Length: 193
Ligand code: HEC
Image 1 (cartoon, rainbow, N blue to C red):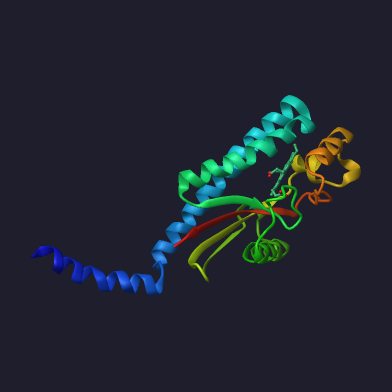
Image 2: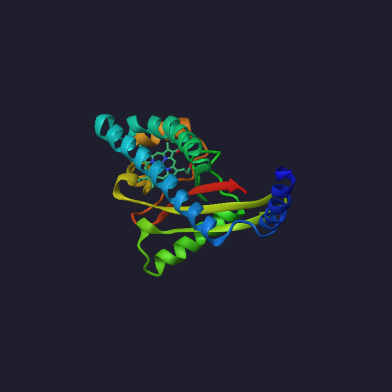
């Protein structure tokens, strides 16, 4: 009669766990994992982007962003067991529209950056309650670097060939007019709990 005794012991702990959500340690571990996941996406995509720009110029690298960004996001999501993507209030990818939490998270990160925090390490996370249950949410700022400007900078400074390609691929593009140091968007990491 060992099994029922075990269940009797485990059940209250399970119920308590459900009611209160993850412990402080579990939350910190998830945040550390989310940091790793967003770092993996940024490193992989950034590396491929730089290589493509060097090999075939910014207009040739647009394809890398279009095809590889969603693929890499899907790979990282699978690897870390999160839902990982990039979003921006001025989105280029039609699927890149932020939800309410993401929009608020980016606005908060922009404020912290304006107050002097280093953009490279700027992130935030939270456990939120939704109609579908509790979720872990995480956002990491994507600051604009000089490399980004040929595709996201002032339209007057974007090469004509890039503008032409963007007009064909992204007729509803909002993602230009940025200057170095602005927050271009966030890596958004989500997990249902
Ligand atoms: C070669 C052109 C090019 C360069 C350089 C480039 N991007 Fe993009 N970016 C794109 C394209 C094309 C998309 C749309 C495809 C996608 O990622 O879904 C995009 C999408 C994004 C998105 C997703 C949200 C949205 O608007 O759809 C973010 C965030 C982003 N870029 C940030 C950056 C940052 C930060 C840099 C510099 C480190 C950068 N990009 C450099 C072309 C570029």
